[in-house]
Length: 276
Image (cartoon, rainbow, N blue to C red; front, side, top):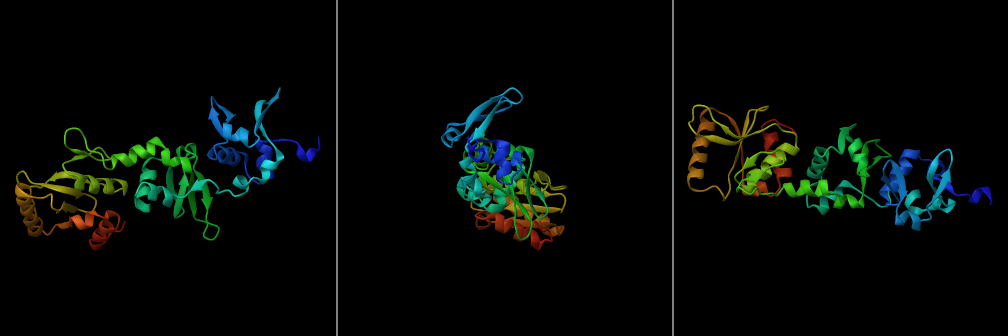
């Protein structure tokens, strides 16, 4: 057999493509050619279709080999083939890009670094691959397409619109609120990393409770919408007088603001000197 046509181990394939062995295994896994099982790498039916096979060695045990032609495979020579951006993930789940980024960060898959985002070990286990902008050097992450079917991610997205059995709305951080509007506001605050209290009692005002309170900035948040009627409206009007009397900083969120919290809340916070 000609030496140039001999099958390549995965580490030899990595060398031929100018990649690290770890990167090579990660890419093959994200392509669905191999999978990890019982501390060993196994070929999938897709990997077998691409020519993958096994070889036995007394020294190394069983390992995967590839035909030399695989080194010219488009999926391997184009490192981003079969990968999707965070924008596509956000679009799939009908979320704003920044909101989707915070959600994935909250799952512990990425963390901020050098004005960009890098993978955590947990993110690597999902098949994410780290990339770097060739002009700016800012890191970013691409994901295998099957990330859209990842249960942890889809469950977390579902929680954004979940309603608990007792009629209260359960928020991502465990808070329970009485309206879908307050659930959306709470989730946005939590995923934005803003410390907040729900139904915070106002001192010297009897049984009066603000919708939200941001202790770091001493800002109150009240939701004003069509859902606020009757006694709730009367109590809210009383709280408005209280805020004005003591010159407290307050953000009032309308139904129109609620349609795009990713735009409206940063704008309203900035007016009070808080930059997100």
